[in-house]
Length: 259
Image (cartoon, rainbow, N blue to C red; front, side, top):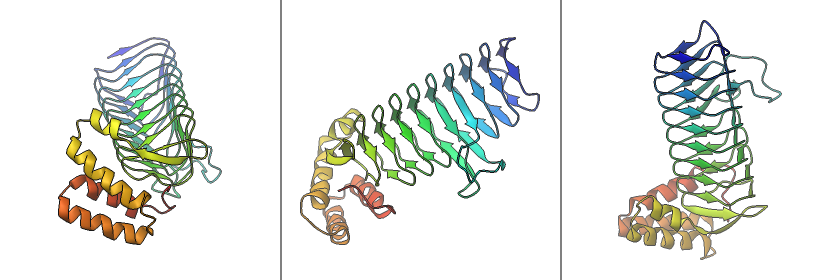
């Protein structure tokens, strides 16, 4: 274990012997940090927080602090972080509230660029990118392989489906289905994230099926219920599993999807 002498480590924290902690960090009670994680400097980590292996935490981050939500009254809520995430300068992540599941959760292999924010009770999956100053409000769910552009804000309780893309300076107030690309303020749908899908080694054939699925929802003028029935028929004929992902992201919507 390498801990700079200027850092303050609570005696009830659990830090693996292979963790590196740079100068002027504060690690609080009930913080657990697994092997291979490196904290550069000037970071504040409060508990209860569990951080997995091989995370990289840059200066001036605040991880696991109390939420400013006015319903929060000091209850013992949690933050759980997976493996191999990168939290750049000034990132802030808050723990959950008892009004939800008392948990904020971040998966693995995510990149949060400077000053990105994850609010209380959010559930963030794997392999996502939050660009500079991207901010998600409380109770937001982010799937996998999602890109959120710089200075983009996401309203509380929204859901962002797998492989969706939000352009810079977007304001998102409704759910974004899987594979869909949105931009502007207020956000509007501008197509599918074909470039992002291709970069993730999704085949041209699968992308073509998703384009057909997208047109059923966004170009045919169908009601959502009717569009879902058409999507299920397309799934049966194409046997494309990504269409099932698209359908599930629409059916899971509670705020309504952007159209």
